Amino acid sequence: MPVPRAFWLETDPTLLERPFTVMERIDGCEAQFQALLDGPYAAHRDAIGRRMYEILGDIATTPIDHLPAREVVDVPTPDACWTRELDYWERVIDDNELEPQPIMRAGIRWLRRNPPPPAPRITVVHGDYRTGNFLYRDDIFGILDWEMAHFGDPHEDLAWSFLKSWHWAKDGKAGGVIDRDAAIRVWEARTGWRVDPTALHWWEVFSNVKAQGIWLTSAKEFGEGRASDLLMAFSAYWLINSQDKYLLEALGRLG
Image 1 (cartoon, rainbow, N blue to C red):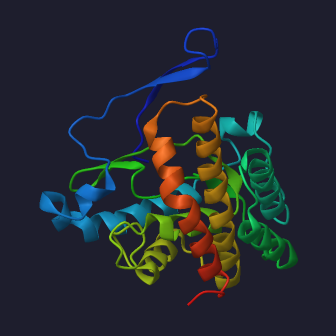
Image 2 (image 1 turned 90 degrees about the vertical axis):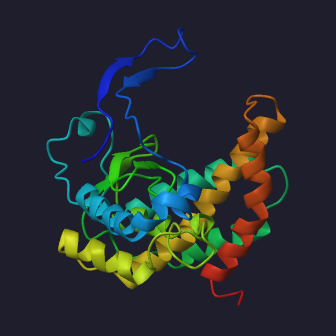
């Protein structure tokens, strides 16, 4: 798995206000999604798109029985994956909305009325797998941003990677790098599993709710002065209204 190696874990929160890790630095790579659209990296876009979903297949097929994370993280039952994630992100919206969220609330009601099939297997879920969260040149050299990783349904990562918020090229390609159907074929070939369209659709609807929870949290933290990074304010301003639109499209309520 192409990831930066972790060297140290510091659990004392007094040093940097929270626990932290020190990891390997991977030099000579690009992370920004815009660089894949033009210039020297664009020639590698197709290969990087295929590699992106090969690696996601490798994450999904990683055996979990002996992973150290099992000692500290609950492993859900196949029929509990969706409720655990939806309950969590609904609470995030409850705690961070600055004004009513009627479209997201409608989406949450739909998700609860139309539960997905039980997870076909319990796997490692990266939790934020998308372009922008890996280091690349002509290949992918490091998968980043594992802070939302958990055990769950492998459809969740696929759905998140397809979220319209990541359609950077505005051409319908997942992450601006690969057609959705091609990504599924690569993932299926790598895992030897079949994607369940019903499950994938449920997790795609859910992904819009999760994303909105993130944007609302960013807006609230910046507005209350608990964060000063302008990117948090920009992402909230840019994406909160768009996420409502994307959810309506996922529900078939917007052409």
